[in-house]
Amino acid sequence: MVVDMDTPIIRISLFLFVLVFFALLENFYPRRRPGGNTKERWKTNFSISIISQVLLQLMLPLSAVLIAVLASDNNFGLFNNIEWPVFIEGALVFLLLDFSIYIQHVLSHKIPILWQIHKVHHSDRELDTSTAVRFHPLEIYISMLYKSIVIIVLGPSAVLVLIFEIVLSSSAIFNHANLKLPAKIDRLLRKTIVTPDMHRLHHSVREFESSKNYGFNFSFWDRVFDTHLKVSDEYHKKMTLGLESHQSINTDRLIWSLWLPFIKK
Image (cartoon, rainbow, N blue to C red; front, side, top):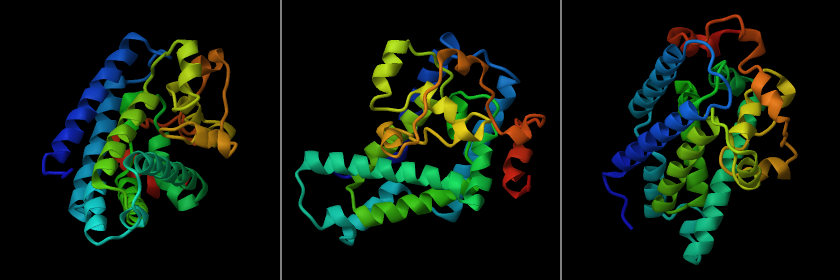
């Protein structure tokens, strides 16, 4: 299967559909009562996302899919040099790519310079679908370099990378949503995938809680590496989100958010 020039259109269209879908759901079935200025937050979060994507294209005009195409053309990577049954290759690629995202997320909390950049995402004092795109341009750039290395090493097909990227962005929107799932559905889903309740705890101001639940798509990595934590239903309603050191600051400001990685606090 050839990945053509319509790939960005496909990704953007699906992204917008998933975004609108979960934005509507969280509006009708909110997990927590929205606080602060939601309109200002959304304007800032999406402005950060747009700036990040524009700068990425100017500085590194590549995509994960294009890197996969280049790796295939040059026979780079494991899967480009070993014949696998399609089903097995697809399953392994998804697992390995998702595991690489889990590792990347852990490193963004454990390595000080990476955490300084990742703080922009965690500085949001509310959590909803817009938080899923609140990533500083530097983090988007570093993430692209990291994914490029992973793709070159693994050598997955461009089609599988495209599907994974779509699933990853969709799951990020889902697990950041301020969405109340029925308890039985949440228990069932979190056995395999990261649910909103599971990821919300990761955005707690308490370091013990924010250092748990790193998964973005599959939830079992957290159980395997003992970084999984579950709290009571009532705790989700009163949990304080964001950064403890920035609770008295208006984190909805665009310029402040972009400058945050350079503020030592």
